[in-house]
Length: 168
Image 1 (cartoon, rainbow, N blue to C red):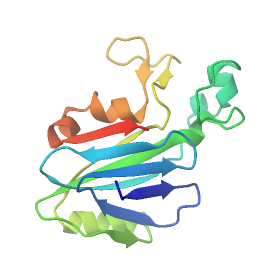
Image 2 (cartoon, rainbow, N blue to C red; image 1 turned 90 degrees about the horizontal axis):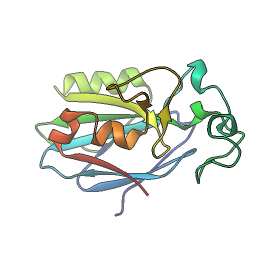
Image 3 (cartoon, one colour; image 1 turned 60 degrees about the vertical axis):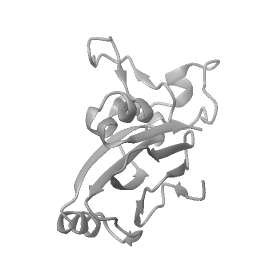
Image 4 (tube, rainbow, N blue to C red; image 1 turned 180 degrees about the vertical axis):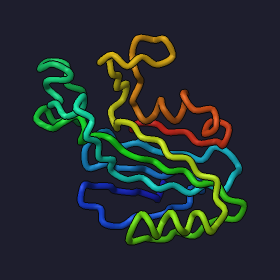
């Protein structure tokens, strides 16, 4: 795999990347993951840090998981909110070349003009990250916020389109 995308909190530009095979994404905080196009569609992706003010996630990793249960790649003094990412998947009839945009407005204007089907997913770059704070999803008693499960399991559109995300 030759494509590697690094994202960090200071990201000032948005890079639209054609997803021909796989790309490895290395977030500044969290577990690296790969996104693979296992289908035959022309897919491009945008991955960036997601900022949330949700008070449930403005607690330390240590407070959330407990002192002895902190997963690998997490820093106990970081806030849980530091680990959220936003992944936008764009599907087009024709391939899109890699392109850098200086603002979200410019990026989304480009996508609208290209007549692109796109969907955005937000979740944590933490494997098996569950929220037991009272929000219940699918009658499981918890909300699954791990970005791999959001993309691979919870959304039929992306699975149908041939996208697979796996933590490294």
